[in-house]
Image (tube, rainbow, N blue to C red; front, side, top):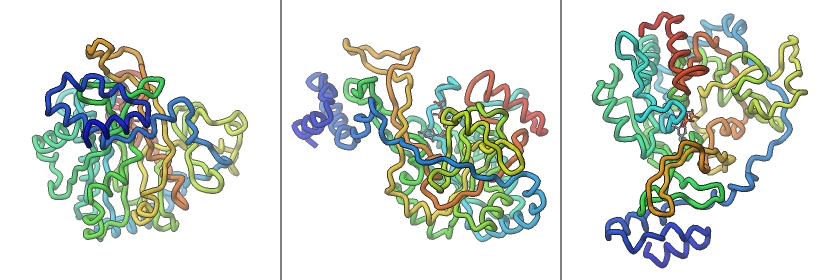
Length: 407
Ligand code: UTP
């Protein structure tokens, strides 16, 4: 793309300021900027004032498969799951492309050491959990790790340095998610350098299309993988490629499953699995009306009582069908480092604009059915979002201690 073409593209989106410093740049920097303009998608920025992509349908409740019921079938489900794993049909996808801004840790979140008397990294905890299943099934499980441009090198080097925490290297596959421009409140993109538009990862909803773009589908097919268990980096207790969960989903004829926990209160900040216009969906805690908060299920329990923990199982063939489907856009207020009018680099203390993301939870609405599968929160839900307080390093350490994990 030459200067004129770049200018024309920017003009269509009202972003001509991106070329303000062009004359000052070296030839190499000019080239880098033109390339970035060519590959950037500015389409989303027009939604900054009017987030029209998120209209909701009619929400109704969806009963979860609860602990008691799972316990009765545990052996049966586990046997199905283990067999499926042994056949190489289950793979795991670790979403590690986030910026982890709330934790305030400069390096990738998975590199955070939650250990007290010894080193226990977040990545290590996840790998240890996977190794339990590898031992139980006596079979290796492919692990795909999604990173972003911002943390790819560091993540890969860390796994190398730590010798994959005992996991088999040939079964770990890294891929990079796409980046999208970040803007001010008027939808004007910020510049990070005079030759670089400020970008952020495009949200965790892009994982399958990024795998697709990187050509991993061929490998998936060749390996005979049929199920993908996608999970967040920050829950250090979650069971991954959990045989019982896999077996329960298959046994119930579902094409997707979602691990859920009983909410502590209707206001707890987790999304609840529900139906939207008869299809599975997730209703956010702030979308629950008073009527929904008071609604009861057949057992007299709150009807929207099961929150998702970002651990989903998807039938891979279903995802191929929806790869081009448009996921709703989430416009999130964030702190975005930028160049001010004088060209000085500023790291804001307060949010100063928007990032544009799609979310994995919206993929649930694209599939025909989804099994809400309850897990005990004290045993499987220890997310690390913050340094202290709720969902923090402190609370996760306490939960690890309760589960006999030495730190
Ligand atoms: P969060 O919503 O907690 O976002 O991600 P985050 O960026 O990690 O943290 P904050 O909000 O800045 O503090 C949930 C999961 O989705 C992954 C994260 O790595 C985490 O596993 N994620 C998030 C991605 O892989 N890519 C993204 O673009 C965003």
